[in-house]
Image (cartoon, rainbow, N blue to C red; front, side, top):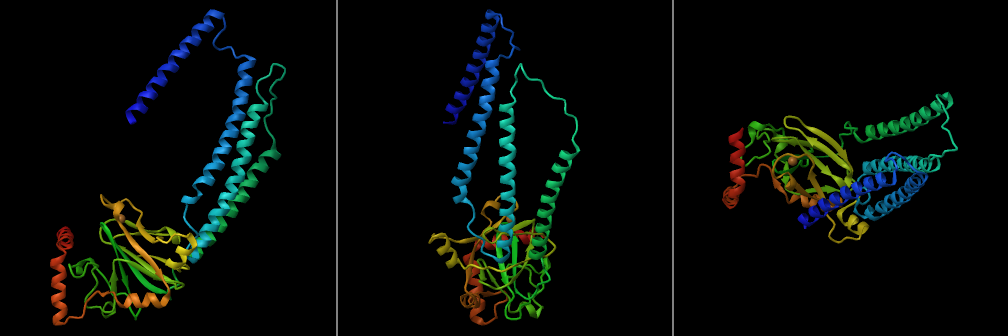
Amino acid sequence: MNLVILLLVVVGVLVMVRLMSVLQLANKLTGNEEADVTEKDNNFNAILMMVFLVVGMVFVIYTTWRYDQFTLPIAASEHGTIVDNLMTINWYILAIVFFLTQIALFYFAFKYKHSKNRRADYYAHNDKLEIIWTIIPAIVLAFLVITGLRAWGNIMDIDKQDGTIIELYGKQFDWTARYAGPDNILGKSDAEFITPENPLGVDPSDPNGKDDRISRELYLPKGELINFEFRSRDVIHSAYMPHFRAQMNCVPGMTTRFNMTPTMSTADMKKETGNEDFRYILLCNKICGVAHYNMKMDLVVEEKVDFYVWLGSQELIFPKKTKENENAVTDTEEAEPEKRQEVELVEASL
Ligand SMILES: [Cu+2]
């Protein structure tokens, strides 16, 4: 199919070249200079300007309407609504400017086509005009920048530290979530503590880490403020939660933060979108290596009660050592040779 399209394009170009030379020859025979532009040519081009304007506008409006269904559903977080409102204001302003300038551009090209009875006016300068088209954009831009900065300050207020602490740990090529437990304090972590049993490198001597739980799915409680902490083991990843309008880089060697309050549970969003299979998702949004495309995590927002029930069933980062437990740990290690290999590789690289 690609070959056929390529052939068609080549043949098309060849036909154009032939037509051009036929036209040149015809001009020579009739004694017309090629550079001569007739009244007919001018009218034809002027009409084409209007055709382009109408077709272009219809296309813009149609695609906006047609592809609207592929955009994200309404924001599922408190700050997401602020982000969406900013975006909407920007789009309205852009749309007004776009339609005014494009219509003026093509209409003027049509109206002021060349005419033998008309001469161009020499018009060098107009202070009033200059002032108008400097001040109006300046006011609009100042409005956008100020509302944007206020929203940014509101969203990035990382002093609000009274929420539930959840850590997201990125490594090539998966995510792990760590929940701080009843004390709401995460155990300290450092790369030197990374072992197959302790992939996040949590300090075993830190009592705050004893109640930390980890999960390969990200569950969030609806309506609760969450203080996210992001870390990375190897390269820069980026935790992207599109439905919540949230994204934060995960940088090796430092902790980045973001606060978020989910406002819609997964069940709410299923109802909202009318899609029974709807699922939230966490994606890596930095091209971080060969399997980057596959670096994602299921994200579920539950009502608070259900969330805490789920959390209680998750694995403690340092399982309490009983005889039974020790055997269980060995079993899982044997059952997951791939995972062990991966951890060994990381250890070797450290
Ligand atoms: Cu990544």
